[in-house]
Image 1 (cartoon, one colour):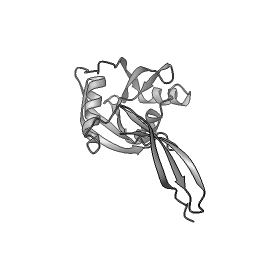
Image 2 (cartoon, rainbow, N blue to C red):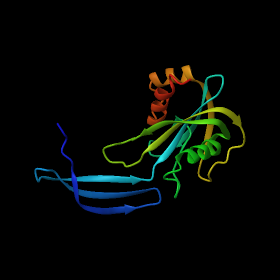
Image 3 (cartoon, rainbow, N blue to C red):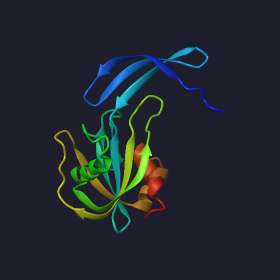
Image 4 (cartoon, helix red, strand yellow):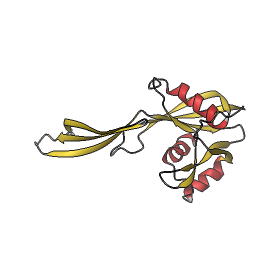
Length: 179
């Protein structure tokens, strides 16, 4: 049985910003009933699980204002203007900027939808290996600390609920059999 699709009959932007746009859509179902959908548009992002030859993964600890706490995450960043089809290059850039690392290989793990009920963001995940340390190149408004954690220890932290970032949890799941 096919699930009925919703068709937009009206789209109204209520906010246009630097990183996101917010709109309110009026949709109609095949039976003629209507509903409202609130959508946050986002250009997308990349995230990198960087694993060294000793089985340690590089993470960044940073304060996340929306939650009012420090989170431990894999390096990540939003796609810049014109990078919508250059996710691998964006992943290489973000890894270097946030950790100073460059990688011999950058394998695509797939794409995730972090919040399907209201957000259009797609996060493209990568596995970086063959790492070489260089200099970090943080943005002016980025404050973070790089941490290197054995993969098994990070998995245990995730199981204890100490890792709450969705992209990091999914990346851990996806790289488990690749390391």
